[in-house]
Length: 100
Image (tube, rainbow, N blue to C red; front, side, top):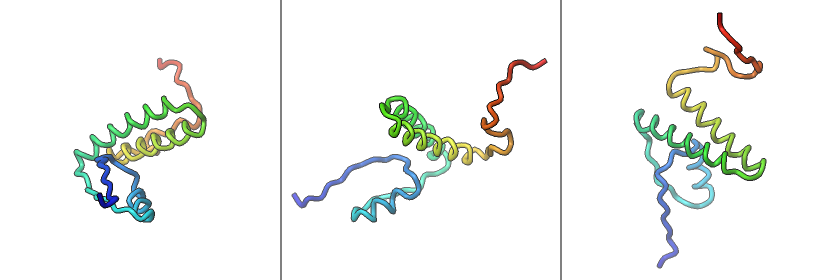
């Protein structure tokens, strides 16, 4: 055995992950997804990150997973052409009670 180890992921990763891997002295194989694959991968990643957030046991781990989840949500909204500017965020703490 030559000490060579291969681990397959086939996961959507953050944009800077390939550079981080290569900076550590490892090599990686990449593929750019088409639009349909990207949409499916974003949904899969969203589920994965939500489960990791829900299973996190300490605050630091929760915040890390929440940051990942948030980035996936932002990426999905950009992919679908939606911006927060169109409908606003949730920063003003507004609760809709009723519409007449």
